[in-house]
Image 1: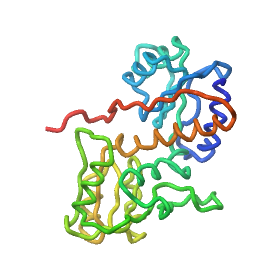
Image 2: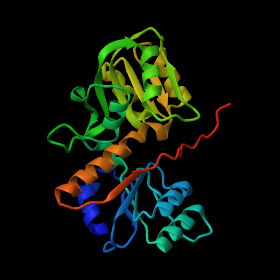
Image 3: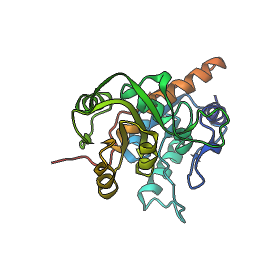
Image 4: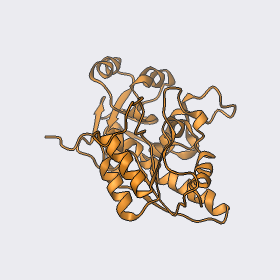
Length: 273
């Protein structure tokens, strides 16, 4: 398979046209005609991930987070991002990003998060639907139900067990004994959807990067509990699903590639004392 072929297959599931206007998705570096045999999937395009990919002999790295989200005037090797670009080009390894287009896809990032924390797959619907999707399936976040209601404390433990471990773990706000049946989730930073979750009437909203003041004001109402996870942990479950989806599409074309999901914890916070 060429890089062009692989990207075409991947974008059938995660169309770049679905990305937010401010986002930077697609091919970052790489020659479209180069051969692709091995692909690494990771959340962040950081040095440790590139080390892993080059050591394994990967031809392509697919990351969720963009390397060059904001405009740059130089990719000189005197900067961390410039050094990564130089290393990738020298090794002949391509870099591709699927960010908000993977968030809004169905299934996408939040579907994988919902599955990881135990929500019923058949109950899922978008928290913030994409108005351009006539099927009503795409959108940011998901709302779903648990197979059986449980106390918040038990659900928090289920979340902790379902997501990869990080230094900061899982935080919760709300009565530990409150009944949880309906849950809203949004992979990555989701405090912009706090009021959307309240309007949906869910029992708990699970997301990442919740700030003090919005969270404090939100929980004062007492109607919805909050769960805050590490940003990396909430998006990592999608990698396995993205790899499976790509290999399934390529297999239908009688083509094969090797995929590998990086387990390197690239969350920004490495210690919690």
